[in-house]
Image (cartoon, rainbow, N blue to C red):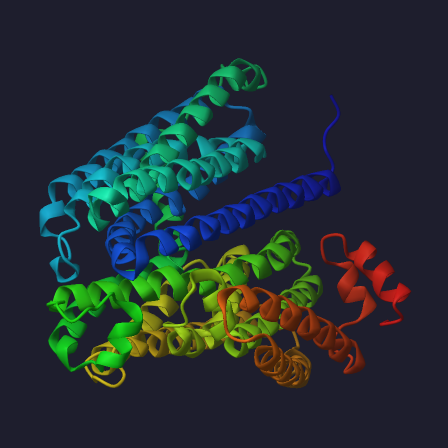
Length: 556
């Protein structure tokens, strides 16, 4: 068998990255498909129980799925190059030991600590106990995902993620529906059981795939070479894993800050919050006796189920388009092709801004009909509009994090998220206890947090890669196009609302038509202002096909 040249390897890396990005995008879409009907089923209060338990799980989940699989993949890839079978097996065994401890400890902490977590949202200990076993199965899955990724086989990881999220969607929603008759806590517990079952099925798939492929994989390795010591492998794994885990915890860290601050701060002013606001997000009758924890739980559920779901979707779509450019930056940087690094970095950031801006502006303008369309209520309109700037900030953060990691600067995002997190803690602390602001302070804090994170990341990216970006090309031209689009969308939305009314059914038509009009206007403005060139578009996945269509419609 002949040796693969660098172009073949580069194509393999890019193909693998695209497979994982597409899988991640589908997982995000499935997650939205799960959250939207689940919110309609459980309401804000029920989603408060679900979300508070899920966010605690998510913190441990990130530890188990972020840095260590990346470290395993890196070491397996290096071992694959040397064909050292004993080294490969030892990496596998050490990884099992690390992840086994993480899984058992994480599960034990959640299960036995369930009665002591976040009582500010009411008693959600049953939800926490039911999601606890998922930590163990996710930890074991992470060993196999890192192993296969190190072998440049991305399909097992991609399929296991889809199995995991698909199971959560089908079984989680079904169990929530069946158990809801026993009460909101039981309905939320049924939903979160889907998370655990998803991890079980995903784990079974990966173990089965490994057993089928094991002999074929091992046959390509040399069994006579001496492996590294267990201590050496452990230190190398942790050296890569720790900074990657922290920098990958973008959403998790900010979500945990919100989880532990919202309940405590809102409980202090719960009965000072305007009743008109509470009536929109809670089921209140003349005989209802309000409790502080129920108010905090409903407001938290509204924020996580409606606002965070909307916030996460656009960056996922943007990253799916832009992140495949990052492996090219890593290859160019390792090959000291700094001109190529600069060009590709500029392109990545420019595309990220161009694709995320219309999402942010569109959601801001259409917040009311979009919430009505998806959830049958516009109670989170102000909350959603305040967080829409973060759509752009988060998208840029995700891509710049990847660029910094690709250029070997793995610690910089760690420092930056710490500074940004402190910003969020301070803003949350002061705004949440202002009765007229209350939960809206969280959206302000989130937008400010990611703005600080983005600015810090951009500073270091520009310093490291020297992309030669100009404010005019990266910000002003796309912002002008997005502004024109926003004005047109606002008029389209207002006009259609007057004609069709404000019902849930009409909001579907209003939102769809407004988005279509806005999309056309934005694309036309982009090309009329010279924001995108033909060469830049051709660098995107299926870029040549996109160029063909644009030429057909005489936009370029």
